[in-house]
Length: 226
Length: 252
Image (cartoon, rainbow over all chains, first blue to last red; front, side, top):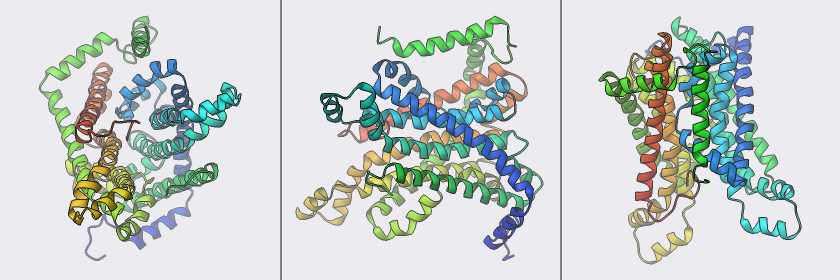
């Protein structure tokens, strides 16, 4: 159509293929397989990142021990460890979940760390003066002031979890959207390629919107940036 | 003693690795000893092939990053300073922010070919987002009082841009760069692992498929060092360019 090369489809053609695929069970199986890797990976990595980040932001001993290692290894692309993880944990889902968790750990750690550290000292002093215990200070002062940055970290991690999931599936998998796009590429099924692309785009967008909505709820007391 | 704390964790990890490697419980394929990894690392760095492959990856990563930096700063500044441009482009960038651009790679291969161009294009696209978003945030939040003062003292629009807006945005521009640079490295390695015949990502996959785990780990170390060095260089550059503001958090 319109003299375009055959691998470029028009938007209506793509939508047509997408809706056709929505009627087949195969697409849902791939979506399920992908989400079963990315969601646990994201949850594990992000919760560990927040926990350790807050701990390092609050305690000096933790800070001294953890932070240098984390900051040193932060610019390293974690995906290079996938082959190693495949050797250690098998080529199944476990190695993929763990590599996604590892990738998601870093942004949440760094943001939770700076979130906790940027708590205004005066608020901590006031809390102490009014007789709050350490746990109470952490829960009522440090955590709320760290939350905006924690959400910023979660947003980066979520986007990263989709990238790493897709990459891991493209490199080695028997199911999932990344696998689907590889199969489509190898068999020159351009329609399937675009179906996979549209699906992952929608998943990414929905995940991000859910996260933004949660932030809006949790941080209702805060001025909201876009 | 407290100065040594940072090294405790690293030393413990290395010691644990060597212990596992020597215990004989696992095959040396899974845990090659540090000495073997070090030997392979030496071979890789000293040989002619290793640095050449590293240069190929570096070249791709920096080309994509450089293009994204130039375009991203321009677009981000426009979005930050013009309501019209922001209204036009903001929905586009925030709507597609969370979409993994990596999914476009197979299509890019068909459009740009299987060589470097498709990889550079993808790196450009992935790096563009953080740079545009953070730069536009910075350009938007320039202190209004400074703008008014400059205008009152008779500065022209070009002068205001050069002497007020750009210096005030500079820390944010570098923050965007610092987010984007590791992304460039991630994408170059991924794309080389997925489909390539050269570059460090390819060497990793090749070493694994020939069951040379020690070699693979040596290349992983090279990639790690590369990422770390690039980040250090960027921070040094930032501290020279933005000498009036200290780096207070990781990014700004």
